[in-house]
Image (cartoon, rainbow, N blue to C red; front, side):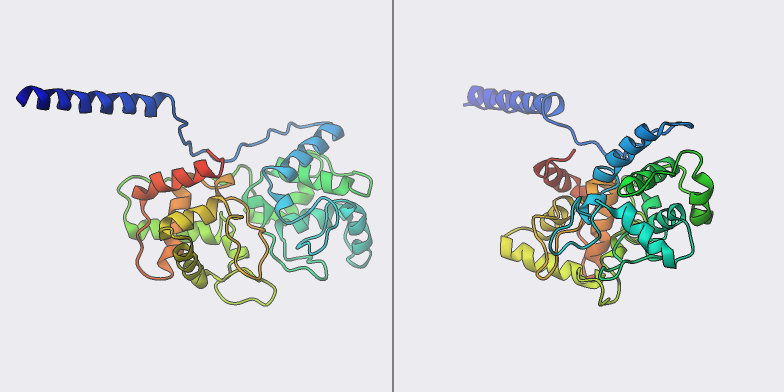
Length: 303
């Protein structure tokens, strides 16, 4: 009997060591990395600048979430094709240059809202550097007009509108250490929701007739209601909604939300989730929730 028990203990220990080894060296490991900065050197040629602008527009900038490449029914924001030419028409009554219009529209997104569209665009300088902003501006200008925007030649115009909010590098990841208090985690989550994450642009604190996404206070109620319908826990469903926003779209709205992991670290997503949960009562999300969030990111195809 004793010999059998001893063999069982040895077997359990052996299996534990084996699966730990497999987990460490063979399974994909989640990393929490800030968005990559695209280097744009002084004197870059126009073709290369436009190529980088296109890359940012379709990737890191997340512009295509709201701006389709060509016009389509029910689009939430103007199409990219022909946008440079459309801006040329608009500035006839604005008294500014096309270059100024584009730069201001990127960083002060409520300055020029085309008729028929809601002001849902977050300020681009929250995610992009000065060089990246200029590359995007040049690419937009190329869609229907001659390109006059260059780097670093257009920096003075861009900085005129950036003012004291110069964005010289990507928003730094917030340092969230193990053992952080719930109060501090919620404070960080609120700051990310209101600023870096850009969440407040589509989920305002008060109802806005131009915005159809759920307001901040209603988010956790939506999450809890539909988590129950799908037979999931609140945390699991909340994380899924952040990393795979197309999995569930609130009734009467369109899926225009970008995946949170494209601009936030995994710890920042925890903080935002805790803050959202705090709007409806008891907060259970903490850094101990990282395994659940990591699982949802892997299911969504992220890392």
